[in-house]
Image 1 (cartoon, rainbow, N blue to C red):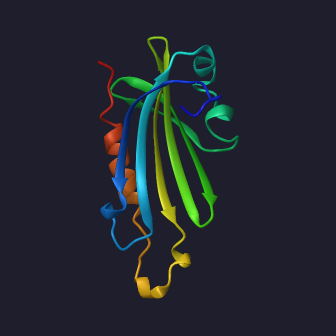
Image 2 (tube, one colour):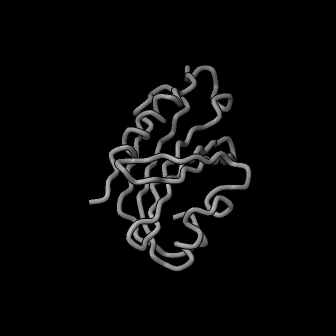
Image 3 (cartoon, rainbow, N blue to C red):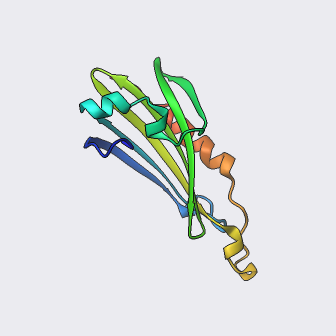
Length: 138
């Protein structure tokens, strides 16, 4: 969980490797599902200023009957680009987070001899959204 450094439980980490889009600047996509029941995590669970930066895009989505707040934010550094989508909800006294990050690198940093192409961001996001869409509370 990306909030206040509070401990939580990580249930799943799923990595889609670079091989998913070979000969591109795609590095990987990682989905992490976790929860926390600490007071701070519950208080901050749906607070936009804690999950993402002020002004970052937010929305809502219902996944299998459960409403989630959705936060989108990006980061960059040393030729790397990170696009994160975080789904948050509270359920049975816990804050749940389904968060995926798509990591790519600046294609201009590679020599033309590598013959790389821009990765298909839409395809990667579609796969990650399909996986998130399978989440349900049992």
